[in-house]
Structures are given as structure tokens and as C-alpha cells.
Length: 378
Ligand code: IPM
Ligand code: MG
Image (tube, rainbow, N blue to C red; front, side, top):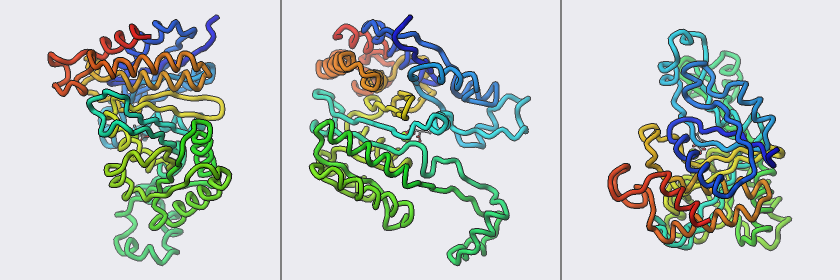
């Protein structure tokens, strides 16, 4: 029997392409695992009305962790149109399967390293080495949203005098999304960020929030952050507003080290940080819970490139490295990261994003060629 059982979820779009690349490297490392394919993605929404079927949840429950490629998420109107005709009009509502996975398995921590590997011509600066800790289950991702507003919700809101302007506009014209955060959620993500900083010799943890406007949720997060920080006197604590840090991050990215944020701000800031180190082609991510984890690169499914094997596999390969870290396989993690770093530094084999040519045009290597080059360096 293999040492590990890994749920294998390419998803859709370029998810398949980058998972093919992952397989090349996993095989070259002789990783002792059984891969259990699991259905997830747009195709299953269109044909079955559920992008994350129950059979997939069952598979995840029987595996050690999951590797995930990418998934297409579209706004509700478009999702309805693409549903098979026999499923239309049945009240099915599309909800992002990755967001659902994070919630179903309580994968509360999204860890997203953004490191400028030496020699990457796309580095904004060479001294960027950040790790974003994003709360992964709460905030505006809880799915508590309304349109049209149920009367009970509207009436309850109207007890607040600040609702006056919307009262004038009328119940039928108002949509509502919520940002719900708990003390436990804030505490957990802040503590993970500081623990990571402590165990990895990092000097500073920065909270990304907006407590001057989002007084209650932002206020709670800020209070919790300050209180957790007291347990880590050797680590500098720093606070930034989400808007201001978007500017500071471009002026002084080397100032930032570990960043911690609630769900939506973590989503935003992790794309920004990825942009500093070569873009989404280099951005890895881990959704981590107490007992289970799903490893997925930060990038999306880029449907126009699906199946063409042109996209950069490095984000996926670095995501596999995060899986090794989590499985406590430090030798595999180190070998893989070194091989990735060598291929980046040599810059002989690289995809179109690095080469600055159009995807699929001469001058750029394919997804699989890059993975094979990494495999050779192992
Ligand atoms: C991410 C993505 C997802 C998110 C989307 C695809 C739902 O942007 O993982 O960062 O917003 O969390
Ligand atoms: Mg995102």
C-alpha cells in the first residue's frame, strides 16, 4: 500500500494542464502515493447542477489531502445560462466549489508564499519574500447574501437609522452581502501568522485591514491581532489599511514579511504580492485545516488556454512543495524547491509569460517541457 492517498482534482480550464505537470515531477521524485481522481468543476455544474458532487466529498474524507488545479467561477446569471436545459429553472444556485470546500472541511488558513526566486526576469524586485496568511472561511465569503431582500431582513435593518437612504430607494432595489467575522476566526489566523513567523525566523507580521471604516469587523480583527502579538515580543507588529498597503507594497515591498488578513483582503493582497514575484504563474497556495488540506495554486482556470499546455506550471509545482511541507516530507520539499529555483535561475526553459512572447508562439516552452526540466534537476 502506498504511504499516502491523495485526492487528485484537476478541476477545469488549465487545471488539467498544470496537474499534468505536477504528475511528471511527483513521479520523478518517486513520491509514494496513490492518486484518487475526484470530480470538481464547471463541467459538473453544467451537466449535474453541482460543481462539487457528494461523491467528491466522500473521496476527500478518505484521503490524506488533496491536490487541486483550477476552477472556473462565473457570476450567477452566466452560470444559469450554461446549465443543461433539463436543469434550468429548478432553482439551482451556483456557489464556488473551492469556497465550499474551504468551508465544508473548515480549511481556515490560506497560506500563500510570494518569493522572488533569483534570476526570474519578471521579479519586480529581487528581495521580496513574503507569506500571506488569509483567513479562509469567514468575512464576505460566508455566502450570507440577499437579493431580493427578504422582508424580515429589511425590516430588521430598517431599525437602524443609517438605513434611511436605502429605505427611500425601496426594498426591491437593494442587494445585501455580509462580512461576518468571529473572534475565533481572527484569533486563529493571527496566531498562525505569528507562529509561522516565530518558527521561520521572520521579523515582522503586518495586519491588513480597514478598521477606520469597517469599525466592527475591522475593529475586532485589530484588537485580536494586538492581543495575539503580545505573545510574540520578538516579532515586530505592524498594521496597514488595505488601500494604503496597495501603494506601499509597490513603493517598498521589501518592508513586508508575513502578512495577515481576513478573507477578502487576503484575496486581494495575495494577488498583489504575486504580481511582485512574477505573477500568478509563480504563486502557490495551501488551504489548511486542523485535519485536512487542499493544495491549489492561486491562479484561476484561464479557460482560453485550457488543454494547450502553454501556462506556467511553477505555481503548481511550488504548491506541491507546500503539500510536502504539510505532510512533513522536508527532504522532498527541499529537493523540489531547489529544482524549481534552479530552472528559474538558469532561465533556459520557460513558458510564454516569462519569455514575453504570446502563449504558444515560438520562443516559449510548454507547460510540460518546464515540468520535465524541473524533473531533470531533482
Ligand atoms: C482565490 C480565488 C478564489 C477566491 C475564487 C476563484 C473564488 O480568487 O483562491 O484567490 O476568491 O478565493
Ligand atoms: Mg484570488
